[in-house]
Length: 300
Image (cartoon, rainbow, N blue to C red; front, side, top):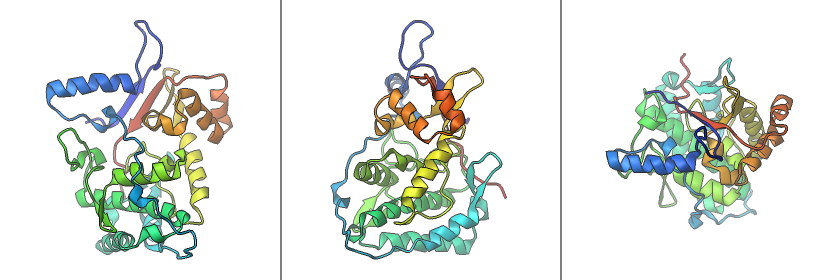
């Protein structure tokens, strides 16, 4: 199955040449799926809303404790490989038995922490690193796979992929990847830069950061991640037809980026290098969206 998916076309306008955005496609896809009695791929489903899980609101900014992310940092630096195309891949096949054990112990160490008693900056790094570490561990548990979409363990007939399956227990609560992303990180910190921090183990995803997030480096890593992705063809580009195409992330989470195509374009310009800013001059709409769900696997 081709996991590289694209949609070109303006979301507004009529006539025989008009093309449609995600919300219009969603309605049509949903009707087709019911008729076919088959689950929809994640790219054809509405992205989850930022729905606050109030359980994780408490924090203690007076707590100076440091969370040890050194094991994750070591694993990332050992197995994260940057290709000539600038895409960060992970050498899943090369991960040793001992390093699998180190990853398991790192995830268990985070899960055992009373994270609601930590300061906000420490909590942010905790959730980002936990999301990324659990995702890598999930891929290793099912490797080899062509795409994370193939790990179809979420409960529910119309669910797809692994995001809604509880993968870790924290302070007595079962937590899923979607919980971490959409019920904790997005609604608590309310910054679109979160989308550059969580890695979906896909070629089309923003790069896995080169180091572990910490309370001290998170702000820098978020800005760096945004600039790297936005100025990469995965984030925004002019395609072979002359259309301005951006990542599906900006359609899925448009509300996080200001709620309109214009606000998305302003976000791209904010972090865009000179070449991209020149493309954006005078532009007020996006022609299409694209995302590559193939696994970010490094062959070594």
